[in-house]
Length: 349
Image 1 (cartoon, helix red, strand yellow):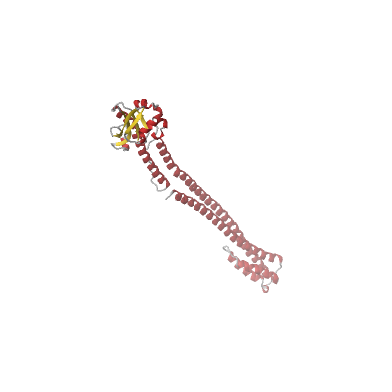
Image 2 (cartoon, rainbow, N blue to C red):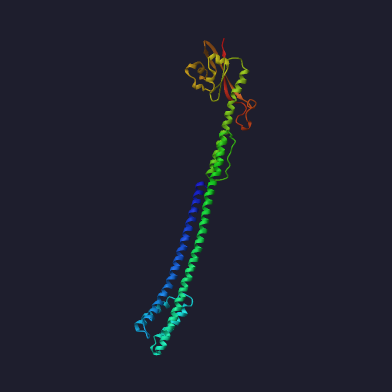
């Protein structure tokens, strides 16, 4: 999986966790609130009905008038449809029975008054049941809210830990490979071209390590080839010692002048320090005779100071023995490879 895909997956995971936590919290809070509102609404409705019945009895004499009976009966019917608590149904049944006696004028005034007291007793039972329920449910609601607060706190802590862990691990996810890459670049800057990066992963860091290793291998090879060129001056010197004291000029494969024999310096009246390392293509018109030697890049003759010189060109071939001072593990040069040329000027008599 690519690094971009991993990051997208990680951030989507965090987004889903936060959204899920928020949605879950909102759902349960609204569920608790709605449930309590409905339950308490029923209890308060019952208290309103019992208050209506109590008011009818308090404001009217026994026997009750038809209008008072109708008001009481209306509240009683509503209460019969709003039974919510345990024991409330039995109280409502007793209330209905006593109300029937209260409204039966044939039983006599004394019996009706006794029935009125029984009605008030049942009304009081119903009120007590609902008041107790309100108190109990309020306490339960408080406990539920406390528990919800604890649960939400724990969920928040877990979410924070997950988020913190993700951020912390994300930093490590980048820091370690970047540190390895930095160390590798530092090694390359120290010309340690054998440095390699090894990332066992299929993301962009794996691609970077592969590119880095290819670069290091290329630099290793190029550095070894450059090292072989640097030995050319030594090879030229050794070769010149075996030659006659004729003027000799040496160039490497980059066409840079890297050696001028003392006799050549005298012949061309040169400042050795100014010409060592200069490309032959950069020679000025003031060095016309010297430029002419390299014009055709082949043997011939040239006239210098009214003297004719025959130009002999010899290839300088590097061998394993000549490169004994190099690190042969680099395997960048094979025996017999040309590393430069000698231009030998033979004076013609």
